[in-house]
Length: 477
Image 1: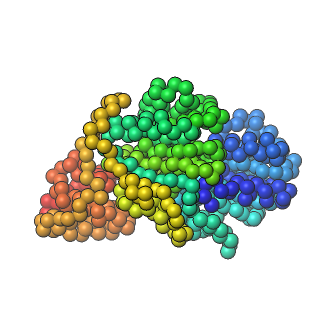
Image 2: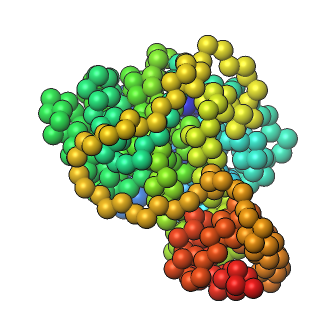
Image 3: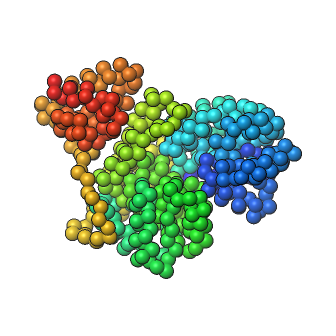
């Protein structure tokens, strides 16, 4: 079901009707805290367990559970493997097992969490109770993965649709941060409702929050990212929730489960990692059913930042094998390409999102920038100087012209042959070495050094180290 459609009610109401223990797996402390507070205000019996609690608080929760607590128990997935929880699992008389944000289960989901992989075992140790899994962002492949990973037997699958007609989508192509800043400041001066500005880095969050606070001193402006301590993040979230017209500048650490109904706009200052992430984050807007704007700023530079994050996938993770990490990285690059295609193609934004999720719902009266004929590039000569940022050497992307001259075509065929040899040697799929689009760019540029090869989009540090010399030799040959 789409964001704001009432997924929480789908398990909270049955939990009350069943009058027993309902175990709810929730991935984020902020999301858990939000729902627990709402239930406490309604006098619904609820407990929670996560890393924010002291040892004494956790002991009190265990004590209530042993005494036969009847209500909802919210648990972070990393709690299950702990010895204390392992001991009590068989004693819990669980009537309903709920996996919230279930896309975290899927290897192919946009927010895969390795700790979710153990949930099938947890479910079995609880006695295989009736199980419900919910998400706003599952493609058909992810839905199949959820069923398989939880070992569900002939589950009932409900897909209510992904369309949010009250959201107006738009993409704005920007070459520089100065252009983005000018557009944002102009937009904020005219849009007085509450909103979220998403950035890809903590540094950018802090810079923009400072800029907005300076330009709009009477408005509540807060920063939110994982580098802030827990108290500071909590305060930022509470201030944003409590004030009309508030603006939060945040990384993707903010948003899952945020239930502020009057958000009138969501701006992505940088391209997100996937269309699932974009749909979920943009979906924070307009939860009251009224119209809201979702604007995506996109520039070639955004690709570099996301590719840096892709190269970091799997670092310090003992759960995933090297082969799984490589596969995840290849899949992440494919998802990133799809976001750029969404941003740069002149096609109805709502239709593109629905097609991505396999939803054939007809689109009527769309007001996106494409449908209203308002696809814009940045105006020439914009020189709003808000801060100075060193501009990196531009890289060509996969979206560049694919035409190759005859010599480059020969290099491309040689590169494909070498890729097949490397794939066989490493027992990997060929696309995990490099996509055709990357090989075509290598063939076109014909780099003569590892440094030159590293400038090509799609060649990360790990691939450069593992395959760089073989690719250079293929180009020379």
